[in-house]
Length: 556
Image (tube, rainbow, N blue to C red; front, top):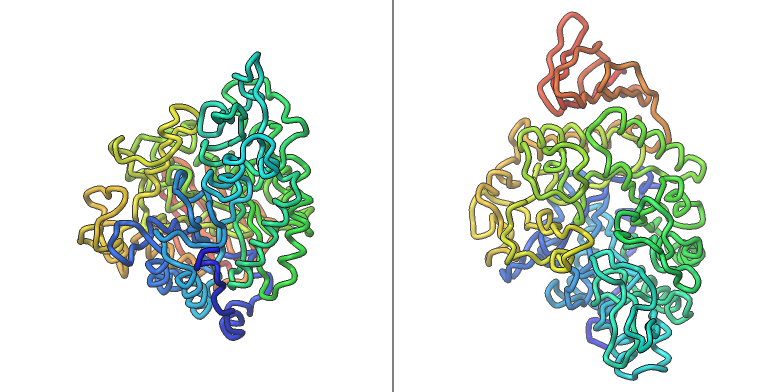
């Protein structure tokens, strides 16, 4: 057992109480995703770390978010940016130590912020102790039962056990020199656990308790739709299987058996004070299937990928909003809304391009148009009932870096030649804090991915205190959202009559109007303007809402 496994002292009651005053906080929380390697570098090695995150916590408090979700920082060979975990109870030295994690959690609580950590239960690293021993011990090893090892098909077992394809491209099976194959729905360095084996469930229940005892406020569950596979691992019978992801029933995703696992986990979570939560990353064919993950005895939230994937189009957005609210209402769960994360092109770039290009785009598009739409989309998202997610740097209006040289790319999907497009590095470029410096304030030793020229003009320092800047728009929007009861939890909106291409809805004494068209529209004044993503003008009881602009009104 490594030294890092020694649990840090339990957080004090006052620290926990600091973040435990508001009941059901997660029903309307704004949660900020930190991708640690790209947020802040404290030691000048070019890689972000936990100490860097800790030093920037006051910025997140002042931004106005409720919680911070940390992407994986566990011990890992980094074959997939930490989503290949070798030790779930240790911090990778690249990011620091368990003491650094403890200090981060404590400081966050003192600042009134909650901490959510990533959990990766579908697969481990091939450097996990279980898998290394299973390979070393050869066929017949009991440890192979904790993963999916199988003999191959064909005369000499030279063919994979079934036709499943990896999300990263190529077959989902790799053959070992001893002749057996093992399953990996992602990279070969990420073998899938066999959740039919009791030791796997026992281990993850222990891991949950380890981090809950450290004081974390919840878990974001990676590939929450995975883990359980259809009995017998049947062939899928289709090529280009990635196109079915989130659109069709698949024998390795969204199996009903996964819900029993989450019911067991919920019992553990409910033993702890402070309203700890689970958040599911669940790609499902329908939002109705997503709702199954957030039934009262399972998880608390699930990412709304249907909303993230929607185009900047009034009809499409309204349909997704209605379907989401209708699906969550029967299970009593809050809707969630998200526009960007570490796996997709930033929405300032997606919206700069024509619709229909998907969520991974290597085209810069019209930067001015993209930013205008992104700002409007943010105000629309923050006006909807439920919980909202912000991905680091979107509050600065950062675009994707679409012109990274091939030789600096690190996304494993890029090197697989199929599957995901492999351009996720563009949204993972370290964010700028200052106008100048070797890495624009990210750290003193450059950055692990190159930052583009002009990054400093989008930095925190360049935008702080500047009226109309994207950063100040986010700060103001989050302050208004927190102050107005009408923008708290809820499960419905009242749609108002509006011109074609415009969304208008009421929540109590609050009205939101979003013009998704490329032309200005004239609409009735709804009350007192609270905030707008662009310049609006009023005259004679009417307001001119510019193209791609959202306006918030108070009617009280």
